[in-house]
Length: 203
Image: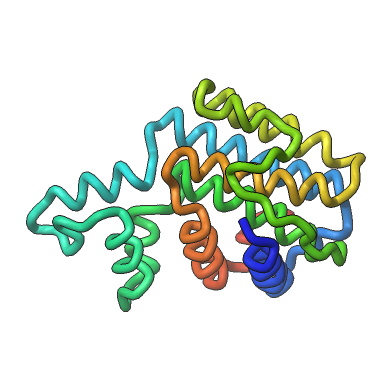
């Protein structure tokens, strides 16, 4: 993932979160805990078998559905451009594994913007980021979520660049699973623009 793209995500996510009432710079531990909570929701989505790609592939098999015959990429383009994209997002994307992984990136990126951090790294699948990247394909989803959780929690007492590395790790993981995580991040940010103060929660 190019640092310029991650920086744009960071700035956009932070702007939306500020508008929704979040103050992420107030507590590092709280922000880290909220990132971990998104990973826990990702785990629950996997336990329920709720994957966006499976939902889309199922709908694409129904000749009565508007995305009949579409590939995942075509369906993504359709959802983003549709006049009722929010309804399509809720049906095909919200609360799925991909959606929760996007939330992980959004939480990390927004927090880094809140503390004034500027992205420094260009990392792709051939680079090492100092974590268990080589093990991703040999592990199941819960094991990879554990690695992400462990890495994120470790970042609470380390330089912000280590948290940036975890965002890159999430993109690397998504790439290995053939998930277009950047699309999911921007789709979730569009959805977040419509949400209430603190997303209807205490913090």
